[in-house]
Amino acid sequence: MSGFWFWFYLAQGLLAAATLACFFVQLFRGRISLKSLRSGWWQV
Image (cartoon, rainbow, N blue to C red):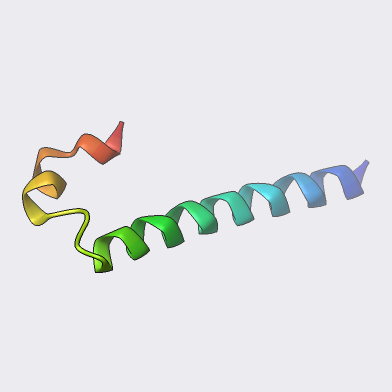
């Protein structure tokens, strides 16, 4: 059972890391402007 939780949390961590990576890639590419960051549309 402990193995299940290990993979579960590992998948959660990878998903969060991938989401942050995509966000920063878009930020560095200039697709996300500071104005849209202030509006907070991505915090849904």
